[in-house]
Length: 454
Image (tube, rainbow, N blue to C red; front, side, top):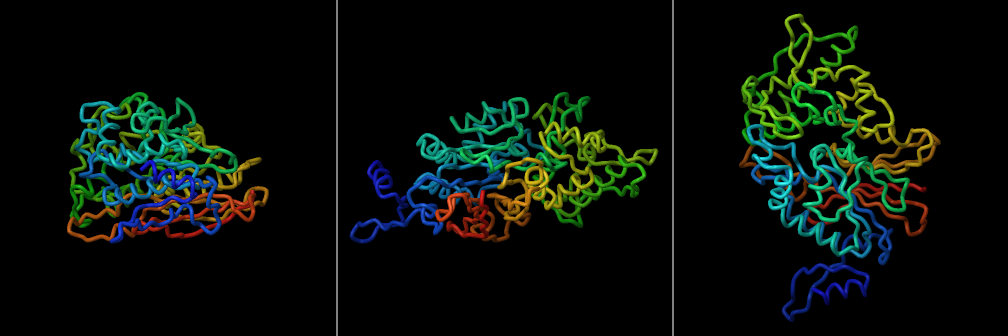
């Protein structure tokens, strides 16, 4: 191993063992990170961005099982590359949300115990990550997402000692924006702070859970886990009661109706379950929540006076509250509450926040923005307020394609596993190339690429 490592450094190429021939000569292939036509073959100048790994605490219901072996291979390529200088994990690396409702998230233990169990369940992944960190050749940066917004820096350090953590502050550790070394023009974050369902919600449920900031999306994810671990059909699923439509003459009631409409759609078309909505099945004991809730505690309902009310999150539905919530989440620009509610499902809203919050902000120097969160990989061109070209990329996800049919055969090796590579153009050092790739069957497949001159 020492001899091979020395060979990598001397030749400027990273090799992976493929097989051995009959005469015991190694058959080797060049590291795919080091063979890009527009890249240097010797300089560490690439920033690799991945997100939404969703490494679960229990592989019986984790969202990432089938892709773990490929993820390990990919990370080993990062480790052995001689041209990658940084690996950025842009949120939802861990998953404290996607847990069946009847499961106590911490099992009577602590968050630190939860982290240790997650590491044990995904040991091969953390082995490689910690080798990368220990090697010191590739900087590893972690940014929190919504599924891991509650993890403290100290507990993340249990999983990855010495990892660089990009957080907005110690008080608001569930969000972070990262500017890679030498590139103040690049902003990388998860993107959940603009999502009505997933942005932190201070003071939302003080009578139920004082100090809690977990947003409604947390409960959505818990129900979604049930939908796949204990599946039913849309026809047999429990139906959401009908609430009369509200007009815009009462803005708060109209916003609650928009919220209700989204819940009705997802509960009947996306995360349908057969549970009785009145049964207390959602065990919390996480993020200052301690009670066990029913699905009805989360869903909007029609009160006797005809108004729409909720047990949880009832006070969120004014534009004033949404503005304050965005400020708490360190967003620069206020958005319309109803567009933000609908945008939690219509993900173009989140992607366009790259322009709203960065490219079109006065005096902003940001020219490249990378989000995760939506799980929809893409690259889009925008124009800044000053008319300069900008690039937005979404790094997609590494989660498996989920199915309710346990006998369904899925070619997981050609699904998801996306990543973004940012590197200087060797012909024009002032120009950055932003490439979106899929790790398709273990190969780097370029999906799209855009250049932006700084």
